[in-house]
Length: 183
Image 1 (cartoon, rainbow, N blue to C red):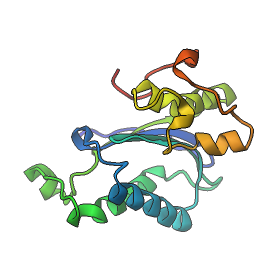
Image 2: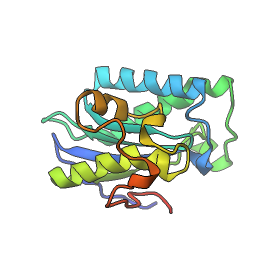
Image 3: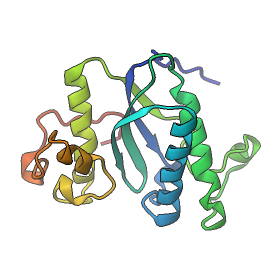
Image 4: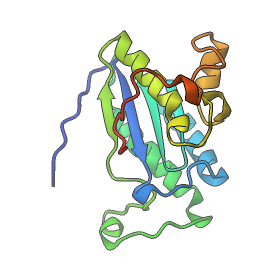
């Protein structure tokens, strides 16, 4: 089995991409969306971290977390979140599980791995924030960032970080990149 080396620095900020297995498009459906909100709340209470930016799409999510100054264990947090989300709605909509996943006691909702990137500086943070909020437009779900309800964009508009009309199709971010996603 491959061993993945991940950057792990206490107090750092990280960009994540987490996808469903086979890109199942169900994360914005009520039982999964509700389970995801509850699992984030539960894990944050037990193992604190800040969510600086977030977007949820039907088959994946992106976010930026900042961890406490004494902690770098984001893999454990993701493991708990993914497990809690998988356990909640499985009676509602069971996901088929392969024999390999069954042997590992996986519930079949998530890809095994996730993509992470340690944020290097303010411009890297800004580029990833823009990418996160632009993502629903990039994937064709909406014509303007403000039209997507599953995003921290609205919170950042209220704080004055973005104007409400930022990110329509005509105003693509200059540095649109693929940050862990297939084009």
